[in-house]
Amino acid sequence: MRSTKKNQQSGGQAEIIAAVKALASEKDISEEMLYNAIEEALKAAYKKNVSRDENAPTNLSVTLDRTTGVAQVFARKTITDEVEDSANQISLEDALKIRSDYRMGDIAEIDVTPSGFLRTAAQTAKQVIMQRIREAEQGKIYDEYSEKENEILTAIVQRVEPKGVYVELGRTEGILPDSEWMPGEEYHIDDHIKVYVLEVNRTGREMLRGPQVRVSRIHPGLVKRLFEMEVPEIAAGVVQVKSIAREAGSRTKMAVHSTEVTIDPVGACVGPRGNRVEKVVAELKNEKIDIIKWSPDPAEFIANALNPAHVLSVFVAENEKACRVVVPDNQLSLAIGKEGQNARLAAKLTGWRIDIKSQSQAAQMFDMAMDEPVPEEPMGFQAYYDEPAPLEEVRQSGLPELRDIPLETDPDEDDTL
Image (tube, rainbow, N blue to C red):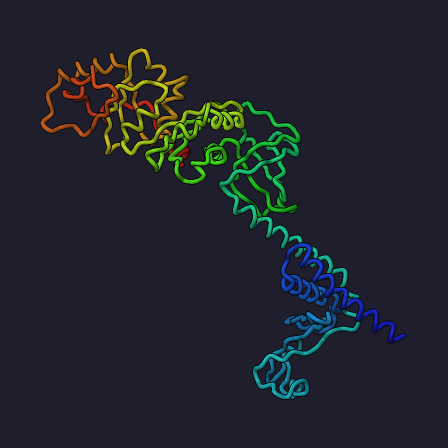
């Protein structure tokens, strides 16, 4: 009978070792981490099951033999002359009975493993071990997806709620908050959409099933990543995306630059017969995209950014990062755009404050300037010309200083990459 009970205990101990190895292999988790979890679980089980009336030690250590699976609980007690707290202290005389090399002040370890301890603590240990396993898996998922922040992923819509769309991202769930929805876009279960990863959360009640990933459909970075997927020159670093200004669902302006003079950055992004940009537009539900050639000259960059309007002159004040743009009379509304969108996006794209004037308005300003005294020192702005005539005399005579004239458009730096 005793032999049978002993065999059962040995079998249970062997099962622990086998279970650890199997779980470590299946979940790709460190065996040592699992052993540590079991030891912590056994310590908790011992404290829970020890009698309240018993003067139980509070400083414990639990060891689990990595080969045999045998668990032992040790009370760690300080060796002192006078024992005032028997739960945590022991006399030198008693300590020497345990081990002959103990000295005063040492920590003596006394085996307090109760009979049948593994059987008694099995359920508690199992619960704690499974919790540690879940935490380890969630940690691995968190590490995997935290590396994907600011990247693009393909998501499958799982459910749609008023305040957010929950999507499957592979090993974890993502949420597309209503604040990150594209205006006018509808989401349906099993839809496949491209999303931009904003952040990965690991804590909180909502993350009990694993790390949750916040994603976006309106972030300017989504446009950049989509072009990286479609344009090999961008992926290779030959064509660089300098900045993006976006009003999601409506229009985007993207400034690009080529590190090689033989490659046209705008043409590379558009692609043969426009097939590259068309794929991005299709993913963004026909959002209009203006691809702008970036220039280190701010005046030239500003003129390009106001595309499709034709710019005659750009006057810039470097110290205030502000400019005045002159366009033909019949293109003033085109330069400003519907509800000011074109000028607003150009300001975001360039990071400059932009004031747009028609040719006739510039002429009136020139006449007003002629009536004022000529300044003793040259004014602090420069001019870029797409077409020198007929505003050459405006440049020569000068305009009122920009700081004296209210500027109509203020850039939003948040959308600059």
